[in-house]
Amino acid sequence: MEYSNPKIPEGINTSKTNPLYEFAVLTGGIIVTAVVVLTCLIMLVDFFADKIPFSWEKNIPVAKMLSDSDTKPIPVYLDKLSQKVIKQMALPEGMDVTVHYINDDTVNAFATMGGHIFLYRGLLEKLKNEDELAMVIAHEVAHVKFRHPIRSLSHGVVVSLILSLIGSSSGEIAGGVLGSSSMLTTMHFSRDYEYQSDQAAINTLIKIYGHAQGAIGLFDVFHKEIGTVKPVEFLSTHPLTENRISQTKSIAMQSSIDGESLMTPLPAEFYSWIK
Amino acid sequence: MIDLIILISLLALGYGFGQYAEKRHYTSIRKRELILRNIPVVASRIPPQGKPNYDSQLVSGSVVISVDYFKRFVAGLKGLLGGRITSYETLLDRARREAILRVKREAKDMGAEIVFNIKLETASIHKGRGNAIGSVEVLAYGTALIPN
Image 1: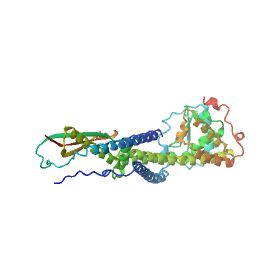
Image 2: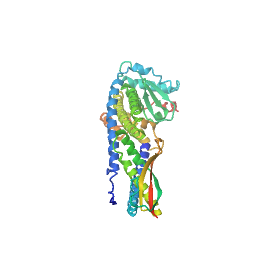
Image 3: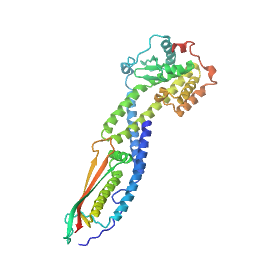
Image 4: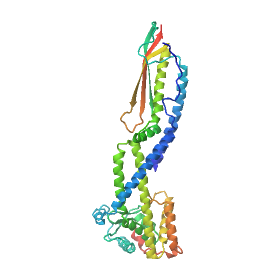
């Protein structure tokens, strides 16, 4: 038997694919597919969330979880102003909004299930006039009007259901990529909600004051806060994109003539109330 | 956001160092394969005929190579879609060749002419620990024939 020792050719046991190319195709493919599928599902759920009666939402004991600050003048004033705002917003039959004041440094305001709106002292301290406060209230009332809290909740439920179904069986890494894509999708929806609420709030401001300078003032307040060390919570729940500002400004500009002089002042005692 | 930055840095680190180590390893493998080419390694279980005056001796070589973060990430994505896990192919190729090279090196140090009945065994370390970076062990062993 003849034995020879030929030189073995190089690279016959490995593939020539560029690892970066493969990485890009895999990640991109999974993200795009996940976003498309989740978007379809969320839109479907959105359709049904809208049909949930508001009275069901009201039965959820949200307000009891966060304690209200008693009968000081500030809740009374906030309630009066919000009634003025709500009157202009044409809420559907059976929908009502409750405003709560929270004595806390957090610079935020939010709307939640059952038509409850929470305003933090931290945010109120930053406001310069009634228009800006009305803008905040109108924005949150618009969230309630368009059923955003229950929609977001439904999206969250659907997304986490899908993730727990696929994520657990696909391994940690693929699950992580799916998780990021779902965040991307829900974030897109929540941004849409912010635009929608901004628009409704500006229209309300115009109805009440005849102009929408309050919206510009409010965004200026946030714009100044972006650079500060302490991050403003409001911005994480209400992403303040350049897009959102410019959109708001362009709507607001159409209706206004000149800035500061038009603003309605806050009551003289306002800042002492929130001390 | 911060999670994403950490992930991308880990991927970049894994890719950078992983590719560098792999390239260096392949260069070294090719060089040593050329040097040790004169010792044939065959899978035959029967010693070559017509060589009665030889001593036989067990030779073995084992190597453990770790997968890098980037390779593991790509393999993890493949776990969802299926297909060739190309990122692990080079890893195992390197491990097999390195193990055989160590066998050859041992045989050469004994003054052997040929190694027959070569066997390869593979084991994965960190098995079942999802979070840990996996590593692979390849063990090669065979019988060296040393002229007496």
